[in-house]
Length: 130
Image 1 (tube, one colour):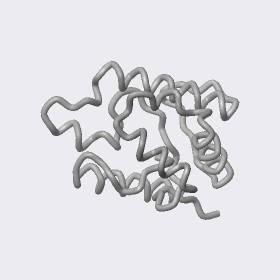
Image 2: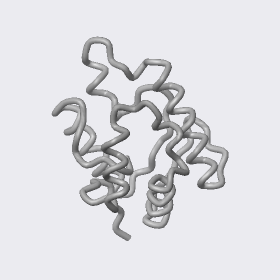
Image 3: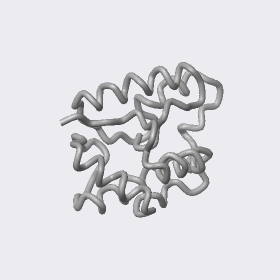
Image 4: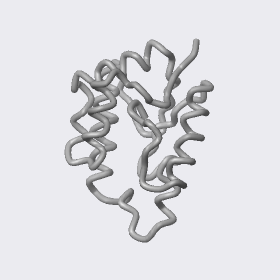
């Protein structure tokens, strides 16, 4: 979510992601899910969605660990996080610094996320107004 700039697997995926990002920007909490989540929903309607692959499950677990460590919390699936502006800035700083990127290895979006983060998150759709 930190580097989402409106690109994705399909127009349905992008439209759905835009709706989720708008809700988060409006203050909705993130529920940490296990397995395919609301963002993945349009992909589940395609043949052979990658959302169920072991690599995705492993990346989710690694990201949960890294973000929990960064936030000083023992995060579990099912926990809720509200993203404040300071939290968003902290997460983005850690991401661009590589502190929360171990889950990104092998991801097809790695280069795009790197470009967005090293470009100051220019064009990123998640913003928080406080």
